[in-house]
Image 1: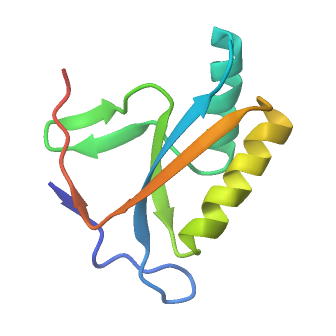
Image 2 (image 1 turned 60 degrees about the vertical axis):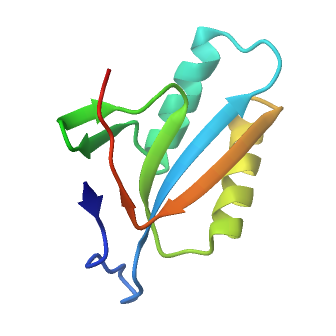
Length: 105
């Protein structure tokens, strides 16, 4: 189990741990998803996570990271960025978590 209760952002605000799921609607190629992964990594959202069984890779097109920004603003900015830079029909779901647990396959 992992908690981020003690993590504070540069403004001294408690960081929310966010899980992001992105769906590229239509018929994206493998390269389109590689472009998505690069875009997300460049924006500090990661596919690797340290879980109960050590480091794991999150399920396909799922990312994690911390933010002290408004979740609605993060969602909107990510969707617009993905639609501009990666794929025009993207759905972005963000879930904020205080605690989480993951066991790999």
